[in-house]
Image (cartoon, rainbow, N blue to C red; front, top):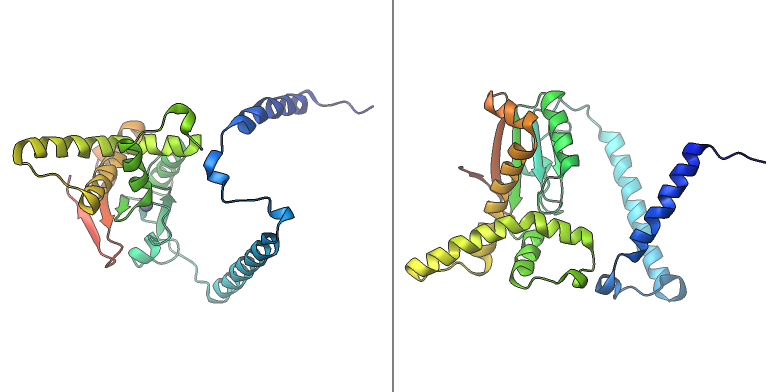
Length: 246
Ligand SMILES: [Zn+2]
């Protein structure tokens, strides 16, 4: 009889204990558009698209292999959104290896990204850290909608999205409060795109604040002038980067 190693038995028990948590999570309307592709005609169309994408990735990599240049060492760390139109290497016309890029929807930072930045600063010795937000950020847009019409606890389809919007909420609340004060004093209030852009700006500053507050390592390096932390906004319409003064 095979003897199960105690460590494996423990791992299996942990896996079994965590599965119901995952299974119990609500997916709700997020999956409404998806049928069971294994039993519908959609199956072939989706499979064809997936095959085409894989062929594109393989041929793209072949082009990369044929034209590969060995990159330089990174000198700049970047925190930016996952938006496919905001590509730090393209935005800053950087060569392979020059940028140490960390991307997350809404350019927020969590412990994993902070660890990555600490590596970039202390091991790779990057002397500059850029936090880049961008115009028309749908993550920030979603957080504004959530602020205006907050969901109750049982209305969330994804607890991961809830966590993201919680990270973005301080920026929305800050701009909302500033606009309330402005409206009370002058009668003017930002709405639409200008309001969104103001929240994007506040969110960049908030991410910079989070970096300093949650990473003593990065805060100390900045205090000693070994690290420059700077924020900017990428304008998707004309490609320009606007540097933010703190
Ligand atoms: Zn974005």
